[in-house]
Image (cartoon, one colour):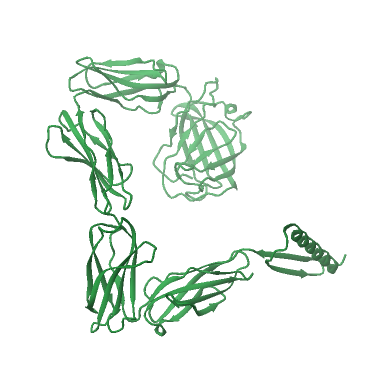
Length: 604
C-alpha cells in the first residue's frame, strides 16, 4: 500500500472514532489542534483538545505608581498555550475598562504612563486567551497612582483594644500646601467605611494622629484606612489601607487545672484559656501560701499546651493556692478561679534507677539515686521477667552509694524489667519508675565492629565502596545465606530512606541474608526512596585481638535502581546483627547493636 493510501486509511479511522464519540456523548463544542504529516514511508496524525481555560493574575505592584510604571501579569495554559494577554485599567467604580496593551508572548508586561492619569486609586486587570479561544479575566488589583503625594497609615498592632492612636504621614507632598486627612474603618471585607476622625488641614510636611475609641465596636476583624487630599484639589484623593486589624475588648476565659492534692518534686501546672477574637497571648500560673502573702509566678506560657513543669522542692512544706491569669493579644486579661489547699510535701522519699542501657551483657553496674528526709533504711535493686511483676533482688544496700554489680549470666537471656525500692526509717517504701524491657543477651557470638571503605567519591555510596562487618568469633556462612561457604557471592545491596522519623537514619542491608542492618546515620537517599546496587559478598576468618573471627565484606558494584545523595557530615554507623546468624556450633548471634569504632568520618 502506498504512503498516500496509508495516510487516507489513518484519517478515515480518526474520523470514525470522532463520530463514535459524538454519538455517545452528544455534539459538544471544543477547540482542537489537528496536524497531518505524510512521507513516502510514514504517515502521522495527531490531535490535541483543550477544554480548560487559562489562568491569569495581575502581579501586585506594591508601591504607589509614578511616571512610567510597569504592569505585569502571570498567565498559563497547560494545554494549547497562551495566545494573548490584554492588560486594562479603570478608575475605581468606572463602568468601562481602558486597554493598556496586548501581548502575545511572556513576559506579559505593559508600560503605563501614569502622568496621563490623575493621582488616585485605580483597578487593573488582565484577560488571557489561550490558543483554543478560551479566555479568563483576572480579579482586579487596586493600585495607587501617586505622582504628587502619598499618605501612609502607620502599622497597628495585630490586635487592639480601648483607645488606639492612628497616625498618618504624607510623603512627597508640597510643603507649601495644606492637606485634609480622614481616618476610616469598615468591618473586614465589607467595604462600608465609617469615619473615625481626622485633621482638617495640615502642612504637607506634617503628620496626623487621632485617637480611635474602639470600646463601642463589636469585637472582630476590621479594615482601617486613611484618606488624604489637597485642600485646594479635594478631588485628588489618596488612600492608604491597612487590612485585618482585630478589635478585641472582651477578656479571655481561663480555668486552672487541679495539679493534685499532694505535690512532690516536679509537677505539671496547666490551665485552659480561650479567646474568641484576638487569641491567647500568654498564661501566667501563680502560687501563694494558704496562710496568705504575695502571689509568685511559677511560669509564664506563650503557646499550647498551656502547661509547664514546676519544681516544688524549694517550697517549704505546707498548703498552697494556685491560679492562672490569661492575657489575650489585645492586652485583656482574666484571672481563673483559685484552687486552694494543695499540700506541697517534699519530705517523702524519692528514688530513681539509672538506665544501664537497652542491651545488657555480662556484669553490669546498677546504680540508684535515693533521698528521704526521714532517713534511708535500705535500697533494694530488683529485676523481673518483663511484664510479669515477679521481682527478685539483685542486691539490698543499707548505705550510699546505692549501686551493685549484676552478673546477667545468672539469668536466662531475655527481656527484663528493673526497679529500685527505697525503705525509709519509718518503713515507708518508695518505688522508682520501672526500666522496662531491658534485654539480657549473653550469646558468645556478637557484632564487634562495622566500617566503610571508600573506593569512589567521598561521601557518596558508589561502585568500589565496601562495607566491612566484623564478628566477635567465627560464623557459619551458611547461617548468613543459605548454602554459602564464604566465597564470593553476587548479591543485591540496598539503601533505604530512614523515613519520617529522621532524614539521617538511612539503612543499609542485603535482602535474603542474615547480616542484619546498618544505620548509616546519614541522608544518603531521597525521602521514601530506595537505592539498589549490584554487589559481591565474601567472608574470611581473621585473627582479631587474638581471637579467630569472621569478617564479612560487601563490595559494591554499580547502581541498579534509585539514586543517591552526597553526604557532607560525619557520623558513626550502628550495625544491628541478625540473631539468625550462628557460630560453628549453632549458637545464635547477639542482636546487640555495635557502633562504628574510630573517629567520626564521612562513610563511603
